[in-house]
Each structure stands twice: as C-alpha cells, then as structure tokens.
Length: 309
Image (tube, rainbow, N blue to C red; front, side):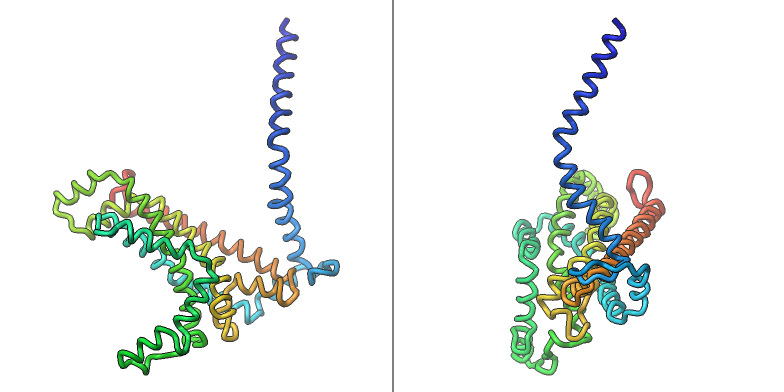
C-alpha cells in the first residue's frame, strides 16, 4: 500500500514537472536565444577582430588594451562624465518640483502633464527642435537681438565649449518629467498627518521637505538615482546624434554614440563589443558604490523609523 501511494506521488510530481516544462519551455527558449546566448556570443566577439562579414579572428585582449590609448574614446568618456556631473540636478530637481506640486498649488494637474510630455516625445524630435531653437537665426538668438543682447547671440550648435552641455541639458530635460511623476506618486502615499504635525510644530515648507518628504521617499530616490546613472550612459545617443551628430569633431560624442559608430560606421563590431562590456562593468561598479554610500549615509542621517537624526 505504501509503495503504491509513493508511486502515485512520484507520478503526480513528474506530471507537474512535465506540465511546467510544457508551459514555460517555449518562453525560456526565447529568453535563452534572445537574451542569454547573445551575451556569451558578445563575450567572445570582444576578443576578436571582426568586420561583421568575414569570420572573426581571435586577438586576445588587444581590443581592451586599445581602449586605454584611444583618444576618441577618452573624449567620449569625458563627455559622458559631463552628463554625470549634472546628476544631482537630475535627482534633486524632480524631487523638489514634485514637493511643490504636492502642496496643492493651483493647476497642479497641468504642471504634472506639462513636465511629463517631453518623456512622450521622440528623442529625434527633441534633437531637431533644439537645432531649430539654437540655430544661428533661431528663436533664441532672435530674442537676444530683440532685447539688445545681440553680443550674446551664438551659433550654439557648433560651439565646442557648449555643445556637450547642451546635449546634457537635453537628456535631463527629456526625462525630467519621469522623475517628477515617480516622486509625485511616492509623495502622494505619505501620511498627510506627518505634514499636519510638522505644520503644527511651526515647520516651514523647507523644513517639511527635509524632515518629512526626503526620508519618506528614500527608496524612490535610490531607484531614480540608479536610473539616472544608467540613462547618463545610454540615453544620449539619439539626442546627441539628432542634435549634432556627435560633433563638431567629437565634442558631443558620448560613449554610447562611440560604440554605435565603431560597430556600424567604422566596421569594428569586435572593438565596439569590448567597449560595451567595459561600459557595462563600469556602470555596475558605479551603482554598487552608490548603493553602498547611500545605505551608509542613510544609517548616519536617519534612524530606523526614517526620521532624520
């Protein structure tokens, strides 16, 4: 009797595993083919010299050592670094704006929609729009001349000292509304009694922001900062290409655009893959460092309940 029961249990177990494999098998196969296999294939290509047509030739670490002396790549890294330098604005700005909107200002719904709209617009359209606005005879220069500040008029799109900062500003502006939306949703879930208690204690808006809003959205702040770091390395390619094609020269070429150029314009997919893998590792290291610093800072600044010390 015991043997029969055990056999039935095993049969049901194997039947369940078979059903699971039947339902999940096709999806797992697609994931392996589309997601996992290209990772291993890319890992191999990074160690080869390949033009995308002929068979790849294994060259060891040559692609990786080439990166150390590639002046264009170093310029691209510096350009991406300029975007990262603006990360505090990218993180704190949406949080502050969401806090202002949360104060039930007139037309709050309009402001939410207005700031989110750029997120819905194609990066190509945004880049083209800024080309028109900042052109030699564009609206900005026309306005400067109209108010007697013609000396400040400039051909902004070809100014090597400013063009990368303009691209960085475009990247932030195009995704700024997404941060506002995230922080607005997070603040909407904060218990209103906390703000009422702060008002009764005589706290002004800035004090309520620091002592109530900031600790209440710590998780969203960390998540958004991670997204900002990722977007700094991966979101400038379309905007930068549409605005200035990475020029003049390489003044606005970012790392993601550099990888694209190497793979599809200069016929060096092997080198592009090596740079991409290195970039992936660099982003991972930066995120680990940030999360550790954020955790330590949180332990120093807030107690277990999230209240500032």
